[in-house]
Image 1 (cartoon, rainbow, N blue to C red):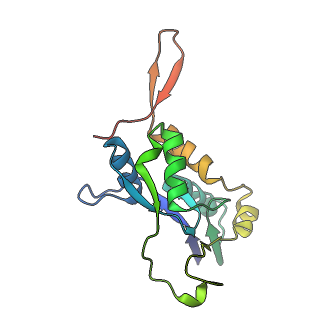
Image 2 (cartoon, helix red, strand yellow):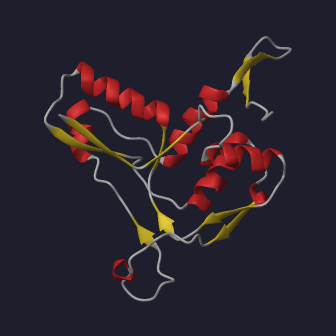
Length: 168
């Protein structure tokens, strides 16, 4: 057996009828439309392709009988993720508004009052030792996503530059 426990994985969905959260970020920022993002719950975020690389590496190394945590090396809220997304993709940060989403939470998870923020960190040390790699930060993951979604364009000097895709 090989069990993966993952943080939030993001990327483009297959179903054009229902946008993934990442696609909603893309759409709202391209339309300059306000999007309220949670600012209390801190988790890791990882591009789905990075998870696939980890999965492939584990299979290539014939790792078995393990429970492995897969996550970015740091944590952030959905609001912070949206801000990092705007930086990486050159979008307007002001369309993302910090708010509080209604998650189904057990009040025993909070140390004091319900305004406390929650931090859900997965320990990736076992995975990192197993595959011999360091997990990226959220910003590094978004940089990878930008390069993956970017198109190469030749400028007048003949050098290649990257520009993000425009949401259609």
